[in-house]
Amino acid sequence: MKNLKFLLVGICFGIILIKSEVISWFRIQEMFRLQSFHMYGIIGSAIVVAMISILLIKRFNIKTIHQKPIVIPDKKFNWGYVYGGLIFGLGWALTGACPGPLFAQIGSGILVTTVTLLSAIAGTWVYGLLREKLPH
Amino acid sequence: MDIIKQPWPWYVAGPLIGLIVPALLILGNKTFGISSTLRQICAACIPANISFFKYDWKKDTWNLFFIAGIVIGGFIAAHLLSDPGPVGINPKTIVALQQQGIKDFSGLLPQDIFSFKGLTTLKGFVFMVIGGFLVGFGTRYAGGCTSGHAIMGISSLQWPSLVATCCFMIGGFVMTWLILPYLLQL
Image (cartoon, rainbow over all chains, first blue to last red):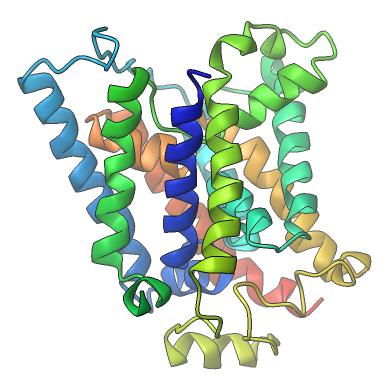
């Protein structure tokens, strides 16, 4: 049951996603049409708070609750970040949802999003299938 | 309670989302990211002998609990903590979308496109099935999504995540400004 705490963090995240309307297709449209600060404010302030938290964790050498060191793996650049990023951006504006909000939408009762989610899983699977042939 | 039931402003929701990052790190040295869960679902359910899905996915079951939590949280927020009503978006966005053919502004998503009935139409297929496919394919190709790159990656000062996030935004602008007007006419 050591994973139960992550379920609780997930519940908090799900509630925030709904209450801030991040999961709304309309909010994503507003963002890409540059007609509202809402989404930029949310992502921007989330980055700032996370950045300060990580600096504090490093500065005071904070360990996990199991007294293990906290290590954040480095991301190594490859061109997939560019090609994949552009492709995801196209999909984000179409569906109005990135992966987290897909799950929150389903929970909130928008059951048709299961179709979008299954399609996203299929997309991930096709990427796995074609990975060797794609430029990175 | 009334304050909780209203939509939360960005300066409340954003910092709370930011705190998920240290929460996961301190609870078990886990890095915030959702899209990797989609890979895990593939590895668990349909690995099909593809090398990309042959890894020890059981080591990362925490994030399956995390997404289960998101579903439950979505349920709680929608049923116990919400004050139903249309999303209060900028009237300019409403006018622009109306001109492009959106009629229903009552829910979180335009129900004239996103519904089971809509699935049988070309428009619904493009927005849900093609859109979902691009999200799943693109995030894995990019090695992360809004949570993993934009929030986790940038906040831990990783420049490749900044590149990825800029590409997310460019893709979104291209779709919204150049392609969407045509797709909404389908």
